[in-house]
Length: 323
Ligand SMILES: O=c1nc2n(C[C@H](O)[C@H](O)[C@H](O)CO)c3cc(O)ccc3cc-2c(=O)[nH]1
Image 1: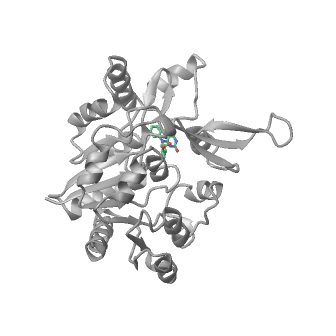
Image 2 (image 1 turned 90 degrees about the vertical axis):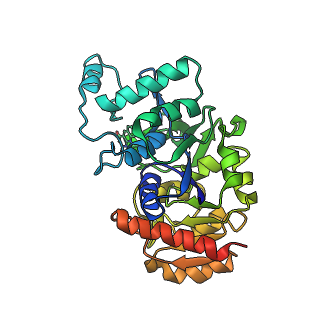
Image 3 (image 1 turned 180 degrees about the horizontal axis):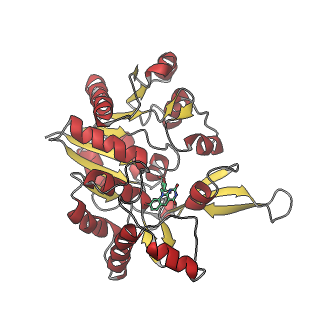
């Protein structure tokens, strides 16, 4: 059985995984999920990217939105707001609250996040092994201008505040995965990478999703040193992100929003292959000049069939470059 390891963020990663499962239903898939987006709210631990993967593959996702639960209601949020307890800008629904209550209860009882995630997945049966990148707390913060400070003053805000409240509408000067340096890969992460036949980077955010997973000491080294080919799919098509606001955070780390620049950002030390969309066919030569075999194929995840075709192309490129 083919063992595939996927480093994933939220919506893009989850939708890619749905296509991958459809392309290779018998594969043994391990997902290493970003937990830098995690946030503590109302005394609860919320893990947006893990939940997005779990709900999407388990059939519980709000399809149009891409995050949160289908058929959601917001009574708890409304009641909290009536007490003047916020933040109101983060949309936690009643069904979703239950997940965070169970998670927080188990964490409080001493279970590590990896065990809690496994327990939550026992209900959702996502058909992949979903591992958090780490059991240790990592929180992505974004440095923005402080409008209340002295001229030129800056402040750090939680990634969710930058993303959801501010809609990435203010300049991001730096992205800081707080706690990453001290974090250890969760149990099973390094083992899965070492045992993989193929490692894939879906078209997830290269900075705040895959970049955060790679920021956990040991993970980047394990991926770079793995015997399996590593193939990525560009999240940038025709100079802008397929979805989300990847361009804003790419700018913060000094990377241009092009398919080729993102490939160079990962680098040939990490990537053994890179897929760009057909509209970026002109970038293939540039990526190959950087030492990364590259092909142009349709990369729009319009439906599961189109996404499965993308996943199949990534696996085909992995076979082609396999030493
Ligand atoms: O744009 C939004 N995204 C929301 N997201 C998505 C999330 O902010 C980001 O898309 C990811 O963290 C980026 O991967 C949620 C995800 C959850 O699992 C739970 C609650 C939310 C709430 C919001 C929200 O209110 N607005």
